[in-house]
Amino acid sequence: MRDLTQGPITGNLVQMAVPIAVGMLAQTLYFLVDLYFVAQLGDAAIAGVSAAGLAMFIVMALTQTLGVGTAALVSQAVGRKDPNDANLVFNQSLVLAAICLAGTLIGGYALTESYMRSIGADTATADAGISYLYWFLPGLALQYVSIVMMSALRATGVVQPTMIVQMVTVLLNIVLAPVLIAGLGTGRPLGVAGAGLASTISVAAGVALLSFYFMRLEKYVHFRAGLWRPRFAVWGRMLNIGLPAGGEFALMFVYMSVIYWVIRDFGAAAQAGFGVGTRLMQAIFLPAMAIAFATGPIAGQNYGAKQYARVRETFRSAAIMSSVLMFVLTLVCQWNPGWLVAKFTTDPEVIAVGSRFLQVISWNFVASGLIFTCSGIFQGLGHTWPALASSSSRIVTFVLPVIWLSTLPDLKLEHVWYLSVASVATQVIISLVLLHRVMRERLAGA
Image (cartoon, rainbow, N blue to C red; front, side, top):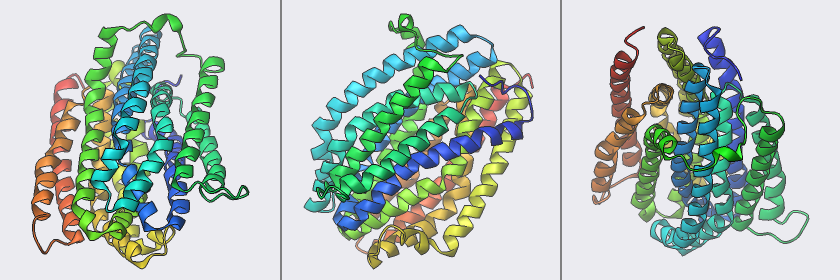
């Protein structure tokens, strides 16, 4: 356990954010590695795997619900010097993770085909997405257990073990992807199914390694079978904090699904270009997201310890760091986005769509970094409903307008990207206003 109520805030942010960023990069490489090898199979395969990847937002919504609830309550317990409550929350989160795991497998296999048929640009795209999801669903389901363990460690200020585990699993995926997708060395290529299987095996290995760490090396929170009996009061505490954070990812699923639905008439190449651009954007967001993930435990421990001035300083430092990093990345995407997209496909049409997407959407980067930072502070304070309210604003500013735009005969892809930029600009203003209000109410003693 690391005490984040002591020492300089900026130093704590850097020491937490760097390992988190490395670990998140490893997670992102899962999808970039798959995308690289899947890209060799053609536009339909890229579009299918990218569209299937939208299902991850549903799983991420649930993992965020568990992860944010766990991290917020455990970090506040650490700040109060209350290890008993920290262990109770952690073990109850494992129970919820097991329930979500079972529900994801049952619901996923039941709904995959109808979901892909509804958003695929054509039959080949839908078939590729179905094949990928069937083999990736077990890996997605195991994410619940993985996220709970990593969130508990992050809440106690421990991030190096999760970084190492994530690096090991991505290396395993890098080894398995060409073997299973392209049949390297075996002569039995599985195509997109191999991509899903490679990721599932890698996630399972990561869960095994994290479990070993908790059983043999972790000192502050532990597996305790005696705490696995459902405690509904604890579930209520976790869900009150976690559900809004999960709702943010559920809304992201809605936004992305609407985009795929709106641009489906532009063909598989357009969906493929958007898919590649989106994966690259997720990788570009890693620095800001790492800072936000570090912000939550630091704010949470200091809030639990009633060191309110340090909570305010955490926001200021994180906001400055995130804005500077995202501004630099904006310049990179304005300069030559095609260079990034061309690393994953040689199709000129796909490159053109992906490049234009990154060039326009990069005007969102600084605003997105501030939104992530606000969410991190909301999580640390244990009050995440304002973050959900901020994200919900995009239903009015993006979803409804883009559906209307889709009815116009002269719709262009750029219209969708520019509308997204405008909606995020509105969202960041709402986030900052709500955060100011919440901090004024909850940190009145500062």
